[in-house]
Structures are given as structure tokens and as C-alpha cells.
Length: 122
Image (cartoon, rainbow, N blue to C red; front, side, top):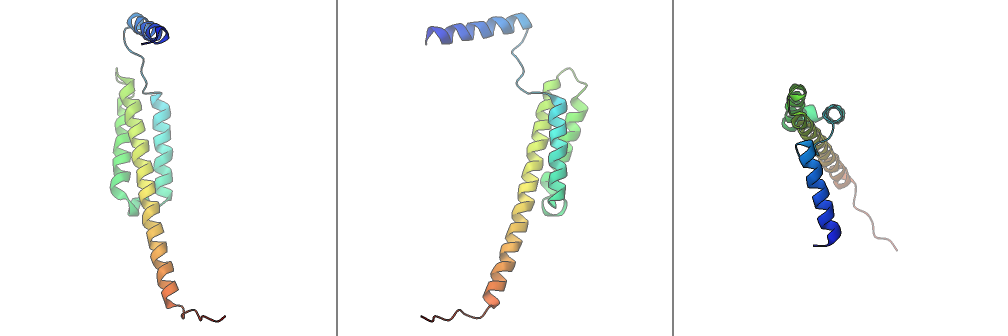
């Protein structure tokens, strides 16, 4: 190990020991919940209520869990639950987009098959 790495790790450990715990990397719970709500709204706009109902319902459950954890003694749990909700909502939107894209492709393929064959004139 390099001396710089050792000093960095030592500084981190001393700082954490004086603070009583390792720093939280979960982020801001309120921001995570707000992001999750925006992602849920985007998923709804994409039609996830009907095209991807299970992942959207999961996102809604996770955001409710995050909101209920806000007042707890472990706010990092609320932040992580909010992040999970946002990820589930993004997945629901992507799934809805995929279903719509597949439907559009099927329609386009059908329309293409109905056209007369292309003549090969030179």
C-alpha cells in the first residue's frame, strides 16, 4: 500500500471514530422520495398503469415505505427506500415503453406485409 492510501484510510477512520459512525452514503431521503414521485409520474404517463402494473405498484409501495421511514432514527433507510422506489418506477416506465414499441413494430410489420411486392426494374 502507498503511504498516501494509508494516510487517507487512517484519516477516514479517525474522522468516523470521532463522529461515532461511518458516513452515510444513502443521500437525502427527501430528495430520493421526490425523485421517486417524479419517476412514478413519468411511468404513469408512459402507460405503466396498464402495461407494467406490477413494477409500478412496487414503486408505489416502496415510496410509501420511504415516507413512513422519514421520521425514524435511521433516515438512511428512507433514502434507500426512496432510491428503490425510483428505480422500480424507472423500470416500470421502461417496460411500458418496450411493450408499446413492440406493438408499434408489430403494426408496422403487418402494414409492410400488406404492401404489394416491390418490382425489380433496372
